[in-house]
Image (cartoon, rainbow, N blue to C red; front, top):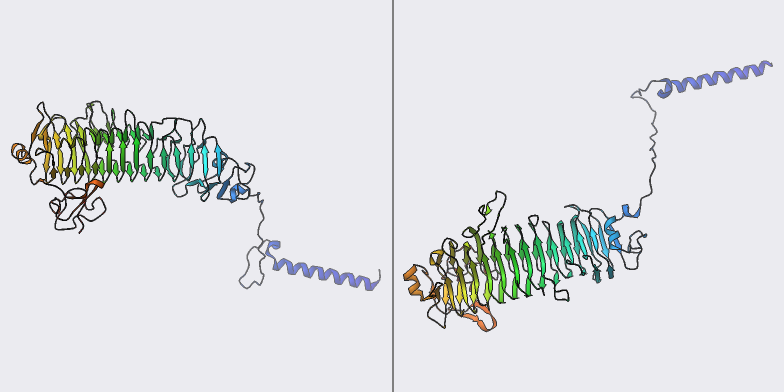
Length: 512
């Protein structure tokens, strides 16, 4: 080989060795030394690992979905490509999602079994102001067995026994027209601002049936309930801690004919509130409490009914309930039990042939600041022997213009009665002892014979205008400043009690 070629090869070998040596000492991953000294000038190269990314479906991306009568369940459920059926939609969504239903008629019932959460309920509602009808046919329009749903803005129709069936909890149904009956077995539900109608060929019996010991802490607010043949609201069998507020219930006919019935017959119910309702045109009874314990009935307007405005009944044949079985009677007889009910600041007029406030064998009831006017019978009737009916505290009321009298009772020993206004213009005898003779008494005779009626006034209450049922007090009314402090801080209109020098009698405080 030529000497010059050998020399060039030797130089290349030396260069290769030198390069390898530099790399060996400068790159720790080659020499096994993973320590980089502080004075190293090597800048590490950081690479981002890549992983397999599955395709994201529209259901995973979206939280708002749409259903249209012109849609397709193979669509992604967007407003541009909506689903076709509500049943398909409710099966796809998760907690926090919203389903909007576009205008149209949707046949077939909807069964909801999924649940949202307290923080993320699932919403099912009509889109904007569009009219959406869910026609259940032989099935309910909507059945809910999941929890935490918000349902609003529908017209519901059905040929089934119940149009809306809630075997659910923590569900709100709002702003809907419900043709037919509503059934509820569950708790913490809200039924708000719906019209519930029974006047149709089916002759539906009960507007809302609330059933069983699982039905508690439900809230019924500002509903319009009418046209049923038995009851407007029927709460039955161990229900408790429910609130019925600001509803209007009317045109309830038939054998029962009760607008609002807390029915603890053969059971009990307890700790509910009936407040601010308008109840009228009930064939028999406006509000009924049956074996009902610690129930508050206040600020209701009740008028034009066949028998009783407010009725309180205790039965033989009851049970016990409550956290410690503190309500009811272990011997099965609730008659004579201290019910602990309060009936206060209600306005009752045009009552039927039994009375404005009526009791059968019930005890332990406070009757405060009510205004009961112009009935066919009496303002207050308490039936029962002393062992059945006692502990009736009757104060601060106005009882006026009732045809038979103002207070009628089987045994006066049942009463604490004082500081009321009694006005019976057609007779001097506003009090009746309901016995074989049906003895009648003046206020003075009542005070003398039974030591009742102390500080009670027998005078015209001077209402603003009885002819238009305006029972506010006129200037100079004897009811002004002559009442007692019964712990009621606001009157029927929401005005502060007292507004003058003292508390006023009846449901209203006088405002000059």
